[in-house]
Figure 1 (cartoon, rainbow, N blue to C red):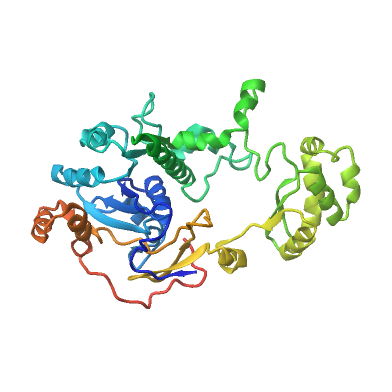
Figure 2: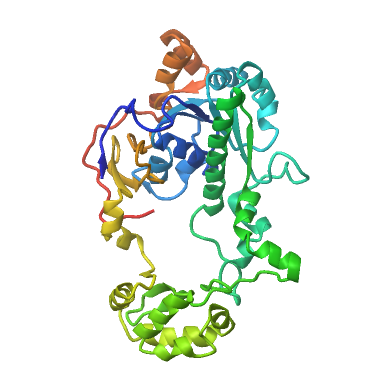
Length: 430
């Protein structure tokens, strides 16, 4: 799919007419607001003059952030120095005209700046404030700084990740930030539903450690009832066998999930050992979980004798859930990703066409869309201040001269490039 619109489609998305001010930085806050932007919300992202930290993360091409081109998409970007009172007053005016404000500063920061919920809701009682932090707005840890990896550590999620004989590794993406941003967006939508009934907004308190902890659901009652402390289990899903990754004859890996009795019977037939489904050690899901080493051994013996393509073909033909472990190259070549518009090419004035991940979830009546790649820091400062706050060109010029705001040219020392020849190399990934 190619998205080549240069102006926002006024009719797109179920969140049309919802104004969001994004004060967050790095990943959780920007992702939360990006979800809303994908579905039609008018998101105005406020960056400090030095730009969001995401711009220095991940891969860059010719000095431009490829990560930023995706996570800042569908937003209008302004640069305001919030360390200055005059800058904070500009942001306050934007927030007073908003439906939702997203922030992920350390708790207490907005209050010190005069931008806390009590201050803003006094004049904007319908405002929904999404607050993303490491440990929430209350509790003994609330003042701690927190990143997603810290939240994972405290939640217990990191402890159960990886192989039991090795230190717990991380996923090579900001997993907990994404989870927390998703919860923040979900909370904002519930708050809007409630506002429709009462006319009043509220605070959505989304904490990194709690968002990660919510994924520990099966292990909580197991500890409370039986004292079982969840441990790392490698590629297996504890208590659910077979459900793991298996090596192939061509040095790839394939996931096979056949824990239910009917599916296991089909798997046993495919691997040439139908008798396993009648063996007391494997006849039920509980029995297989108690004999997982032996069960996985039979499967591994079979997968090692075949290529990943052969394994997928035979298992899928038998309706056994299975898939190779995809690389980004596999994803770009896969017809399912293409058919579902999960790889979207967006025009970018500096990078040419850039491919970004598609919109999730799919709505049948009012689907989201991608109408713009993530812009440069300060690209829309002048337009937003003029259109939304009614500032004159002279007022904007004065603010810029005092370093209260930055437009695109002053922020980067150049205007937008018109070069359309920069293309993403085939198979390039972050």
